[in-house]
Amino acid sequence: MSRTNFDTLLEAGCHFGHLKRKWNPAMAPYIFMERNDIHIIDLNKTVAKIDEAAEALKQIAKSGKKVLFVATKKQAKQVVADKAASVNMPYVIERWPGGMLTNFPTIRKAVKKMATIDKLTNDGTYANLSKREILQISRQRAKLEKTLGSIADLTRLPSALFVVDVMKENIAVREANRLGIPVFGIVDTNSDPTNVDFVIPANDDATKSIEVILDACCAAMQEGLEERKAERVDMEAAGEAPAKGKKTRAKARLDKSDEEAINASKVAAFMKEDEEA
Image (cartoon, rainbow, N blue to C red; front, top):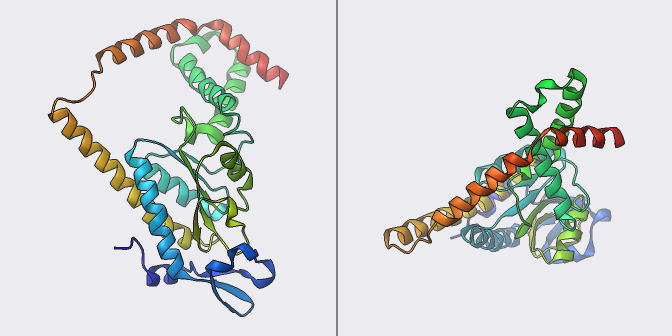
């Protein structure tokens, strides 16, 4: 059974494309007709493509891997943030940091820096700093939170990218293509679908259209997460769960060493970076 239907997509305005003069010929297979100089998307194909993408996303979620959602256009930001958070997936809704995928270690350093600032704040290291220094570090922390807070739990490259408007997010798509990361995308009639692995032909400008598509995809991912959880429960019941004792002790040793490494010298390093910036 399909996860969406023609009427639901029609009501959400998923069929509205762009003006004829703005079209990309590569989208011809997904265009049903032209009306009032506007291309109309074939919603029967959209339904099929949503089902195909949803099934692939379900398997990714079931395997315990991450899908990075990307949408920096105003009408898609909040919808993407809410839907991605509902399935515990990372997302980017502010400006795409260039090299986020191709230079991932550098991004991870920035995320770790944010965590280190939090630790220094909590252990009282900042107590002896001046108000000006504290203000500088607080501003730096807020800036990092705005751009990278939503990917703080992304410790490795995502297994897939879900993009709203592949034209606007072309840098993200190119980085994913370069690394061989599958791309799922809502593709309008003015965009090029050739670099997208799972094309969902639909209106990428209307909030309702984006929401309906994400509802179907995230529902499938939630099913995958629940199936994964059920399988783990069955494994534990059968006594097949992997031993976690050593891993926990190792993590405890790492946490202890991290705490010992945090000292006043790091505060000086932060201040130095701010001065250089």
